[in-house]
Amino acid sequence: MEFQRKKKVYEYLHHALINLRTGVVMNFERLPKNILAVFRERKISTSTVVDILDGMGTGNVLTSKIRAINGDEPYLVAQAYTVSWKMVRKGSDILQRQPSTWEQVKAFLVPELEYADGLVYVAGGGELITEAALAGGMSCTYFEKMGFSGVILGGAVRDMKELKMLNMPVLASNPIPTDTQGAYLVAETGTHCLIEHITVHSGDLIIVDANGVAVVPASAIVEVMEKALAIDSTENTMLEKIRAGERLPELINFTGRI
Image 1 (cartoon, rainbow, N blue to C red):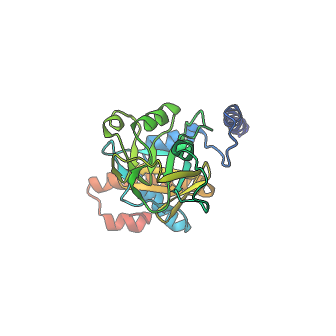
Image 2: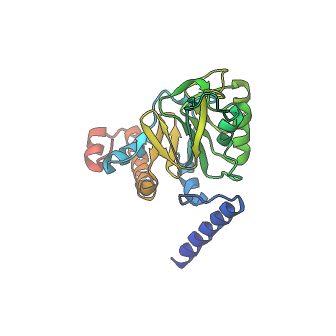
Image 3: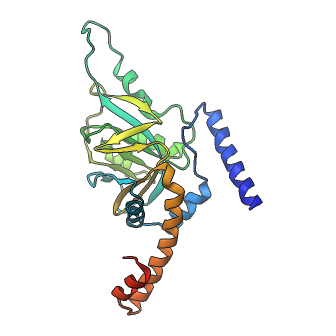
């Protein structure tokens, strides 16, 4: 117990030092890498996670319109770091000089972060932004080099040739050549963003697999992960028994799982 306590303190201080070095004060606690690694190695299904969330009356899934754009069956588990977009609107004084389009969007590169290990980049602006790309090949390549586990966009992306060269998954609604400059701006980063009717907060746990994208609120992560690991063991045993010829109805009555 003492070893585990000291280990948790060390990991917390390690992340705190990284945040201080980069000038970032995170408004959420970073999960230790070893916990994420266990979840990732077991490839816990989003179906399992959503069943747990349903029972707890919390959590969400992102729209099925958002899909892996550069690979077939991604698996990702990481905490969200969010970028919130909104439409550009004219000011009350039409003669007033406006910021450049670059000034309006440059925060999407999250310059406040230097390291992004254990994080997934999540961007949105409410209704899916399908006619302008929220990121492209160069920015996603940069995000991968920063250490992000993946990129999830509440809308379009561009530069498919470059995206297909990446190892990390990029999820988006569609490819399109148009970018956001002049039409949208970045409202804030590191807080929360809206993808259709789902709010994703920085620090929420994101799980992605072939089924879709599950969002676990930060406050529920520990409980969900503990339950998910236990259920995964039960369901693997059930699958082995089904393959051996046992009847599923009896197994469900015994385990309470389907």
